[in-house]
Length: 410
Image 1 (cartoon, rainbow, N blue to C red):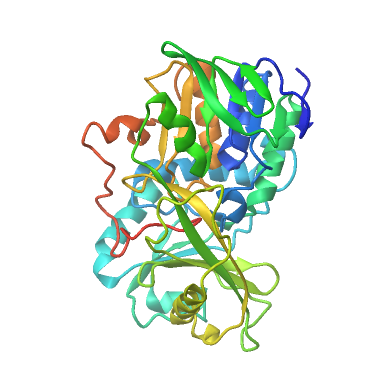
Image 2: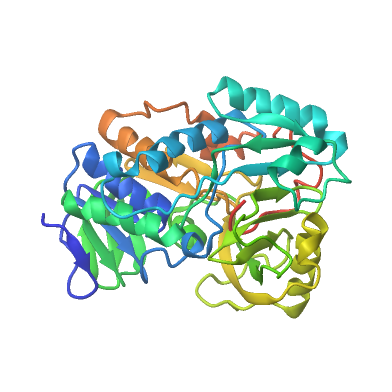
């Protein structure tokens, strides 16, 4: 089947694999499938590529987690980000490796050290730094409330849409079809196997579906009798202009700050993007929600930013937006080959944290479909059955204030 971006007309009649969702996971999966020898791949996106959480994401690319599996996925993704031209060969993810600081409450120092030891064991370039060392790394940073922090000198952030576009162009060049404006109405089954995907523009016969539909996942899973306890959440971010007193030639680092339940990174030429985490706006409609932010949120975000970077006290807000993530019951992603239906694979419930792991998740799905199981790493911790088993994912070395939810990216 010839590749192409198709925004009108009928959908292809058949496909070896249909990928539902045009975010980073879906686009990465489509590309990796073609790289693993599958040519009859169709990527279906209800509106346009990167229109969901990926396009609204802070697109942080950092390896620091309070668990080994997500750290491994990110380290594998970093190999793709850093070798983009050789591996993907199309587009540019806009990776800016300006370094990332992980700030935690002093009471969490032991957990921080344990997590960094795990990351170092897995091959991550990271270390524990003192408050005095932080002043050298980022002079604008307020350090009076912390003792140590985690420092990753060669991670940072990327650009969500251009990452997706690069994967999609590479998949298209390898023969995949990219369908925008094709809303999936249902996943068709016969007995316990997948038989096709029905869209608003026609039906595609297929025996394999990879569902990476973000906040829309329940609409397709619940009719199949699959209820994983997930719900879509509305989240908010804001952008603040760098003040005059800041050295505009030296951008600050990416920061994840448990004390103020926030993350921040440079945005554009002279701005900072910040997300402050909350549990607000659960179970919203991902197709019909307010994309603006409340004035109260802007105030909260400005205070959190100034608490870590005092130079931003009273900073000018230059923009803000809201997006939707799919929240899992334990705040961790669900990435699995489903036992309910042969040929059904899902990546969902990421709770806003899958941009940085998306490139590697595409490899996992490609290996699952072409080799029968993932070769990259053991995906057991991400299994969908953990909730029914009474074994939700709990990080033993998590940090204070880490149970309050997530933003578009963290």
